[in-house]
Length: 471
Image (cartoon, rainbow, N blue to C red; front, side):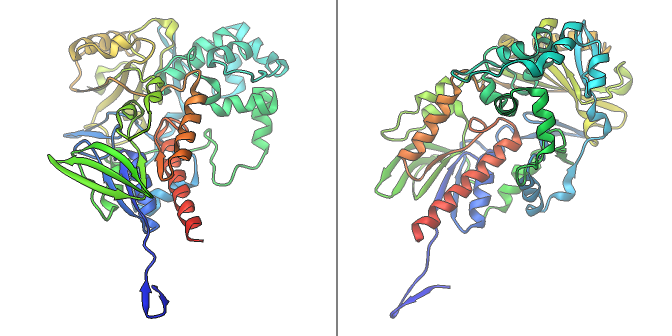
């Protein structure tokens, strides 16, 4: 209701927000702010929404070019799906997803999921198993400097555990190398166990007894999900819910603070445009950030965030072409095995409806910080390298009936040693430039769920700051 003052009517007008980038972080922030009656404009340089979250649909095949699933790590994610009215589109994996394979001596061995299976597994040496027994008695890191994930694991669990558990895991999540990642920022929960409980094992036991932080769902019990028509369902649904449609083909030319307002000049479909806004959210990629033309603002620090190249191959086969049962989530390959690929997901075993009848679908990854040159090969050479490993590991000796390539020259941001200073720089920038915010997978986690949660957090901060100005 307008507020009456004398004979004049004054209506409280919510500030406008310009969001640069229509990936899942930008769209999530836009949706949340729109609910709070902010006037939202999303500018996208490309021709579609979703960024890396996109599903390629060809005939009866559904291939993901980026992330392949989402984890329900917080009630807010479940709430978002419910509000968007796409709960009926959600699909969960079958029981086989609990099986995870790691390669040793070019054979698929199940990753142990319990203490008993760990001690009976052929994946780890006797020394590794003994190291686990002494882990509770190892002193915690004194925290005077950032420690690499590799040094952290060697110190607490030994080299063999690093080689056959952590190294392949990091290749699958970050396409990265534990030697260069910061344990404090790349795996903050693991780091926190040592800092709080002085032991990973004691920490896991004690933490399980503690009440969960409000809304949080532990990762070991969080459900994984996708959608019937692929992950692109989420960004496309959010975009359709926005009152003002995303402006595609929008190239940012300059951003300047004028008084309390931001002025954004951009070229939209060849025409020069200017927008004024109280708030700007940069929701693009970190590797493009240094080129963002904000007057009197140096963003070159973002160039220190490494993004290794990664190639994604989606390969479909008739079921009888694959000797392995594919009875699991997928397989990860340790660096010490010296193979061409980083690993593969058994997508047709995870989610139904990804293939024609009697066919299977694999999603294979190459490159990363381990072998960046593998991702930069030609499509033909990448396929040859991949087929060589799939023949050895899964007994596939026939040509695929479905092939889809996606090459990312700059893929996943690496939370390397020194990432703490990068995080601090973002905080200083936002504090020094009221109304300017940054959100994306380079802030508080690289997973889809982490990215969504940070976008929601950013929107909450903006709403809170606006309310404080009204008081």
